Length: 359
Image (tube, rainbow, N blue to C red; front, side):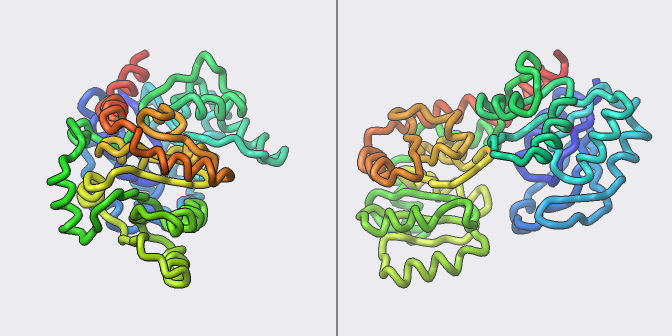
């Protein structure tokens, strides 16, 4: 069996899954562009491709968009080489052109999504989404909320199949939470204080809602560590300075190895994001033994968190609810977070996709 996957850019978590899947079956992957504009080069630094890969020549525009006709030309010329074509997106112009070509020429395609949030679309926008989504013959979805998203735009419920959407290897998941001695050693290395430590790793952009998060912590005694990069960083620095805040620390974007080391030193993970169509950091935190307090607008958190066990889901419009979760964080179970992560690894994802492709 030979499968063609099409994805926007070589995000490391996608590359890792494809590498694992290539051990099980014959795949080729087309990436529309070499990087997303809003991602630092370090995000892609460790990528290795253990499968045949094609990068479209068009440089694209915006953060992730491409308009080239190369993808259509490739499918037109090579479609008979593949038993399955999996489109991992439908929102770029190149993807839309390719899907429209396949619909017109009765070429079956699977639509794989990484998450989804139903919005109050205009009639035209909903019609377009329905066209590109509903004409697939199968759908691969990471969770129940994403299922509902697909159904809203015309997918057949009985033809939606779930897979773990992951960015962690089995070897990334701790056997047990880091010891107090290990935590202390890591904190010393990164000049982090003693005491309860909440960590948030995210892009520094408005959607991540970190100003609200900081405004809550300025009234608390615990330390908040914000890790990331982005155009909102200056406003974060200004907010901390203007409010004379001593318990919030900003740290630049870390590669996976360093991020996981810092996560091990923490006690809890927190995100108050306004919208994440999935949200990998929830899984990364759990892999390192951190229970997660998360906005209920993070799709991954809604799927992975069991309230009061491995984390809390909170409404960002109810600050008292957020503060209550913070006050009760010590009731959460780190081992339950680890066990959740163990069921959602890259290896699990690749095996499930392999089974789906054969089915």
